[in-house]
Image (cartoon, rainbow, N blue to C red; front, side, top):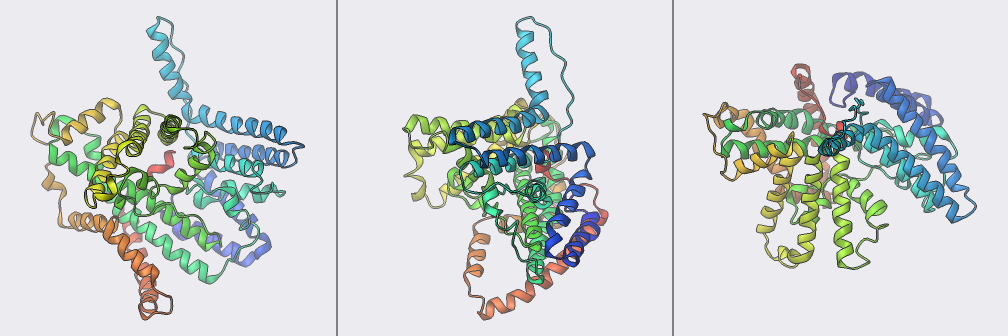
Length: 477
């Protein structure tokens, strides 16, 4: 079930809110757990069985780790638990990829190929696996106590706002909220407003940019010239940002409706001044997860320069692989890792001085990396990058000229999205957020924002009623 669907907006969500409100605080966790399981089972019963298995598996390991008689025993239990979680993730998400690559090696030595298994990818498995690992690791580190109630622990894993595409919420961040929180009319109103912001990003902007991006990245490269290639890349860059940040806004808004406060996941990443700064702004919960559960345990930057670079490359190799079982994703991750190393080697003292150039440099690197993220294979990605810089000129008349995409409506959406995702929007946001709640500006802005939200909800509903294309990119992760 999609957040940006009429079924969710006008049937599922009202049912959850009314059920939790009228049944009272003592039953709210059970209401949320039941509806979260229904939400997940909507996509298939087999997927729901896997996540229930994950809940039970990690619940008992969490209790065992919490009661371990020694740190060494706790560590052994943690290793077994993490290994079990990663094994399930690898089989379901990477099994086919691993066998295909093994077959390439076997056939190269003249051996017979293995049968490639057909494994149905379970939506959001990377996200709920990372949640489970966070849970048991936080218990081992004594940052949280093991949850005694399996249903409460299950709610942390399967809570539907963050289940399919994040943000990645670590257990110690919301452990207290699972027990005590305020489910109030004020929180519901604020949550609805935040949810509508995300819905607008997704339905009005992301879906619009997806059409040319999919057409140009899925078409014949010989029919694409340089301007059209850049147009396709700009559209995809805006599409993935509006899609993923829109989903995160919706997740945070939903959590707020039910009394939870989730960590922010985006902070105007396209206004970043370096690749390091970009990862402090883009999918921030994933960056912090890898930092705290992988980069720092590996030694971080404490064991010398070469080890620091090794750790960075390894983390971003796994970041790429986490996003998808393909070599294009691996290259995308390594591409970012390479520039993080270069910034530490030579650019860290230069970039801060280049006030405008540093933003252009960062945006260019990020966008070129998106080519690998979007492309079906490595060959296509390199050819597309060649198109961007004038190589491999079009051998025939472009099937779709740039002018066919640039309608008045699309140009307005494009300009609005660019302005709202960059430096100007960030400065406006900081200005409004720093104003005191008692100020006249704030008092005027509050009612205006709610009225605007209702109008946007109406417009989004109209869009959804007539649109057929409405997927979320990050559902595949």
